[in-house]
Structures are given as structure tokens and as C-alpha cells.
Image 1 (spheres, helix red, strand yellow):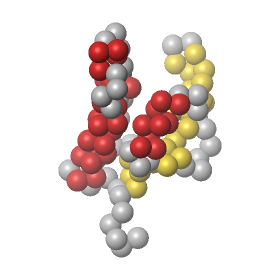
Image 2: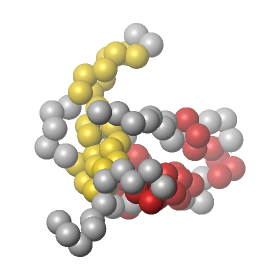
Image 3: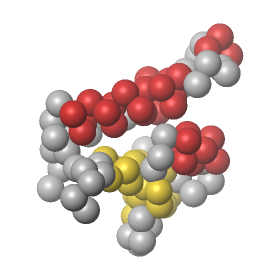
Image 4: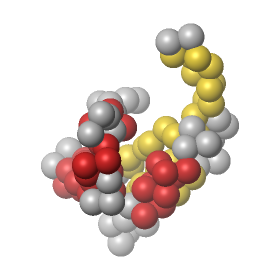
Length: 97
């Protein structure tokens, strides 16, 4: 079941990436969205879909505490380009797990 979808990649990339590079905006945005999902919406799990070759996004995911899942890669075709996406997740720990 999907409750909502947020694409952070388009928010933190663009023409002026050099101006903000090194400020860890992607990490800060991901942490903020993850915290909001857990505390305000009460979602126990937040997922990311990342291309295996996108090392920068994988580094951000790891830094934010996300882990790869055992799910098979999803093959996607978008704008004439076919690629695979790996699923990463962050599960809220409640101490009752």
C-alpha cells in the first residue's frame, strides 16, 4: 500500500547544484522527511528506490540510516530509458520490536 510519494532527487539537484554542493542538503532533506513520516503520519517504514549505479544517493541513504531490502530490483522505463531500482528502507524502532 502506498500512502504517498516524494521525489527528493528533483528538489536537491538542478542547475545550481554547485552553489549548494557540500552542504549535505540531500541528507538533511531525507532525514526531515523520514522523521516527519514517522512522527506526524505514523508510518513505521519509509522506502527509497535508488539506481544501483547512483553511488551518491546510496551514500545519502546509508548516512540517513537506510538499509537495502531483500526485494528484487524493479525494472522501470521512464522517458524511453529502462533501468533498475533497488529498494532501501528505514524502519521505525519502537522498543517493542
